[in-house]
Image (cartoon, rainbow, N blue to C red):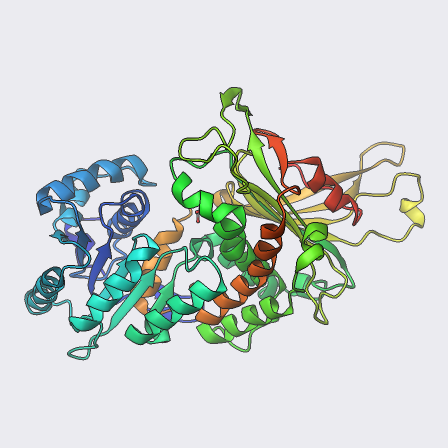
Length: 512
Ligand code: BG6
């Protein structure tokens, strides 16, 4: 494509429901010198620009405390985009893209920073045609949210002007418990209406997460089996070989439960367990997801210790290299009880899922990285081919969220030969080979959706609160004791307590 085209192309693109057009705007990133901007947001925007997917005249304004010029800011972003972009950076495309980026230096609590920003946005609205549309991105620590929101309101930047719109994207963590999430929802709600509020859960932007609904509702063969009559259990795993990577300050307070389960993994669970929505509209889909969260059997008190295992990694080996224990990581307290591993057995008390155990497991410092959902179907009756002492393997449908995105189905087949030997085989679909193109990063999709005003892949306020209500029960019980905290060596698949948790339901955790 001609590099001159990248900032003018404005193709229609498909939302989950409709063909939607991302509208041009000024995108203001608060916390623009931080990790998220460098690793994810700017590389995502660059890739969109390189594909011609960004709306014409889009302006990106980084707003942050550190002193620097726009030129310096662009140079730093170029270096990080070269490092983190999913496609190699083309000099010409980069230069065209970088020309749309500006830097606003200001403390978050300085009203002058916001009045300057408002003036510059208005000038661009006229000179560059950004049409009064503004998209604010809170990529800052949560304690800055109230300050920034307050100033956006007092400077009038949150008002819809000249027929344009003002929207806000809020990064996680969205609260630390139900009370703080409610407070934050209240605070955001005073400044932006729900329709203009986009709470990021980047797992929802992953292609494979979006495909869960397509798999279920665009194929006739799965949905008729998608219930307790045919499914014996479901396992959702998100394993990471990485440790806390310099984020000890945050992770010590959050742990795996708040960091991964409350948001990403419960979101995957809702997509797997929801009823068919009445339409593909954002609210119709989110209504069904909320119902799943409301049907989760709450865990409180002693139940927590029967259904949830928490653990922490000790020293071990990852890819043959020695790694420190969690307590040995910089910034982690020597007697920390923060969980880096968590395994849960959940029940969804509704008509479809009664009696089907759902298992969730996530951890840092696992031997391998990967996120997958495995649906195990009930075995065939113990007649005909299934009469020997060792029963036939069940059918398992595995949705690989990442890496090697795809879906596989395990089934039994007769091994060629004169004797009857039945072995499990796999039907396997790989995105890469079937569609022959790379999967976009979650943030690419989510940024375009926010520019289009499509909130389907963002968490609604009630979703976030229901998920916190469930997690709070567990966190409360954990506060009452710490002797349940198990340990496992870094580079191992978790503690024996988790193996026992699954075994109580006749289940073995999958090896990935
Ligand atoms: C983030 C968590 O939300 O998700 C991290 O804070 C985690 O701890 C990350 O590593 C995992 O996301 P991804 O897309 O790399 O699987």
